[in-house]
Length: 140
Image (tube, rainbow, N blue to C red):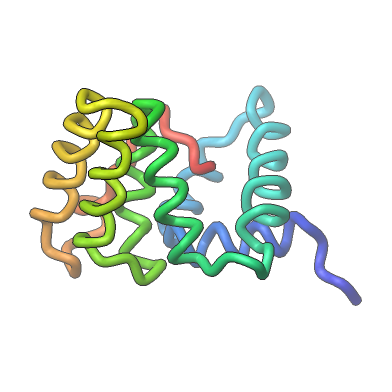
């Protein structure tokens, strides 16, 4: 039997973001946002992140650049998740330099600040202490 987009998406989502984070997000899901959670699991994770043409490291760097350029707070989540995709902090610094030229110094400055907070933390810290989770955070 073929896996559904939802099942594939849930697997990828947990591998990239960490099972603990995804389980916390799902535990906060209500009838109001259940369709949205299903949508991002199937679409972002099951269709886009599961595509074979870019590896997860590359997708992670692209996502970080886009979120930094747009000034989205979800950047913290993807900076944290980059530990699961083989991205080195030096790679992120290079991407953020690119953001500075193409999206502006203020966007890159804010992203560098967020990245410094993430990478000043020990890699093996507790999930609660090292997770960027907030009550409003979604994981696209």
